[in-house]
View 1 (cartoon, rainbow, N blue to C red):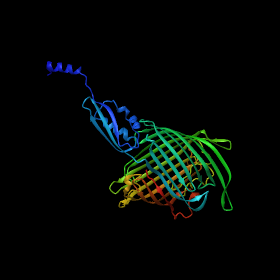
View 2 (cartoon, one colour):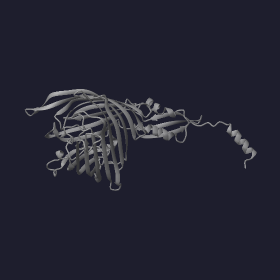
View 3 (spheres, helix red, strand yellow):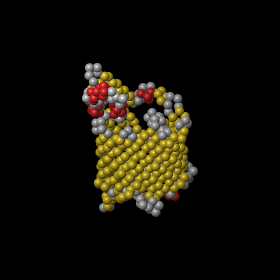
View 4 (spheres, rainbow, N blue to C red):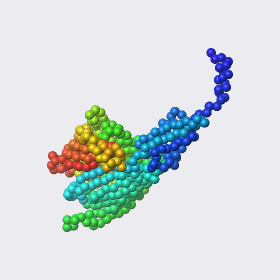
Length: 459
């Protein structure tokens, strides 16, 4: 039972103001490459705000979302003379350089004819924290017969999740299966997008593209240009991506999903006086399902669908399948090349049983790669294997997948992979046998496997 004295005290306390601690300053220690002014803009919403038990965690999450730091420690110091706190953030910056999308393979076809083996190689190099403002530059390049070079500038808009990308790429590409080459081609792109949390990205892209297709003819054993076709197109794209993965490599549990709406309606290719414009939808889904955490076995599923509900692709732009990344029982881009029509729709499926074989003793590299990542001074490569089944299907009319012109293929095989877990890539040797398919695309000797040797980068 409340006494009169308690009631009086309660009333008095109601009218006495309560002064909460306020964050007075936030200072950074260890940011030798990242500009202090940029970091202050990111954490500006916290300065002069009320300090509470969750403040340190929110500051940590905000800074961690920039992907600039490998270590972040938030320390609070209360000032005795007033009701304010000073926060010190001690950071360890990530390396500026990273590699990705590495690829290496052997090709035995060019201009639709078997030739001697030639090598193709591509690599992406990313320079993060450009100008000390959280920007990043991505460089991509390829060598030998198919060669290209491009760069992309990623510009985050302060502490917000929004960003701009501006990029360009120039290159030359001989066709594996047709008697033409693209020389040169020139792509540009401008993107505006948003990162939704840590795992999702959404952007819209406008991409003007130039192509010069050279029709080739063989003269005295040498391929020569006999006529050319050059044109501009402008593509638009709306793209969404979701990606998550555990820290294992290869991952035991991981999901990747992307979908894109593409169109060249803004400026299409004109073929014989007819505009070849289209609306196209692409989806790509990958899933690793753990079978055994102890012995590191997993099931890998991939589905990739490209559908064109409106319009049609031009004679240079139809879908093709085949190769180490797409359909391993066939050489690159073979499926679809022997038909007179242009395929507007494509379906690809892959099922793999992946298993760990052996982890090698640590390899010591000393300071050879420490400029890139100090953890590479010593690492343990992994030998892994897989049994796989691939299937692909191309067809012309979206509403008549069986009645319209189509081509199908299925293959099965085995893969041996030497993986470098820290850089999340490695080499692969794969043997694939043709199981079934359209008769015109089957090898005469289906007992002989297709051999693929290359670099792979699993998600």
